[in-house]
Amino acid sequence: MPAESTRFVLVGTSHAGNVGAAARAIKVMGFSELVLVAPRWPDVLQREEAIAMASGATDVLTGARVVATLGEALAGVTWVGA
Image 1 (tube, rainbow, N blue to C red):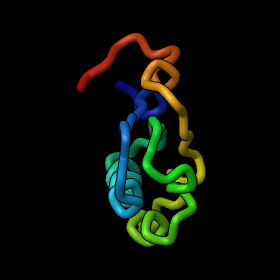
Image 2 (tube, rainbow, N blue to C red; image 1 turned 60 degrees about the horizontal axis):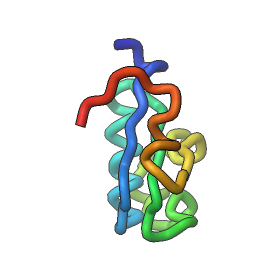
Image 3 (cartoon, rainbow, N blue to C red; image 1 turned 180 degrees about the horizontal axis):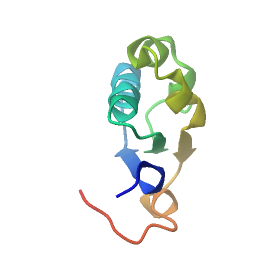
């Protein structure tokens, strides 16, 4: 599956550092699309812990989206793995 057609979705994240670490892992694997569903902190992508843990993957954080529902996060997706 091409990297540009792969989307990573995190639901209900409660720790900004984990979001940053996920962004770093996503980038290391060659992917870039991250969507957060109803995170604990609405500004999680701008939090210091997220940026610090992203360590070189701030572009993934910058391009990430925050949405209210899983349905919004999966809009347009034809295959889902969980």
